[in-house]
Image 1 (cartoon, rainbow, N blue to C red):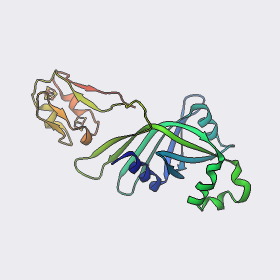
Image 2 (image 1 turned 90 degrees about the vertical axis):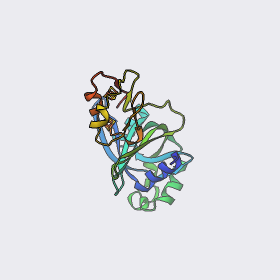
Image 3 (image 1 turned 45 degrees about the vertical axis):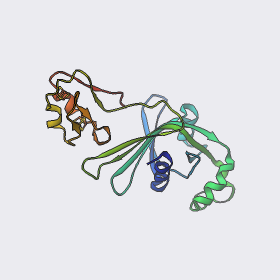
Image 4 (image 1 turned 180 degrees about the horizontal axis):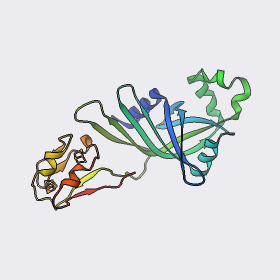
Length: 202
Ligand code: SF4
Ligand code: SF4
């Protein structure tokens, strides 16, 4: 699927856990609604009195994750920026229940942010093998995660034998089907010649 499809899926899930860190670097998480998707950006709100608002202004970066009823997880880490309050009108039109929470002019305590650049992942645990796919919002530098079999492979086959998802193919060198990999690391721990590298991770 394309980025726009994943963002639309996120809008349908709507309730996401948004993570930031506080002034001491300790993690914080809260549920925030994705209010609108437009031009490959995610829009959400917070009120000026909330700690979350201060975090967004100070860090301009969030990580969020949500789950469908079918065990499909969508996560996204990326840069955010505050945008004009003019976005409140289309957001309230698309989310009419907001009129009950912030009736009349009280909506003006809200500020609108958009996530405009980042890297996301779709992760489906409901099938066998599992399936994951990365998607990019904007033009960030892509970060690769998981494990990679290097040229040091002596083709013994031990990694393929232990892989819980059977996602390592026999080749020279052996190769991991990245879209089906759990990132569990069992192959790397098993390899007798340490030919499996861990790539950049969270
Ligand atoms: S266990 Fe190591 S050496 Fe053996 S096939 Fe896998 S990567 Fe290659
Ligand atoms: S990390 Fe786990 S799932 Fe992925 S290839 Fe290695 S053993 Fe298989």
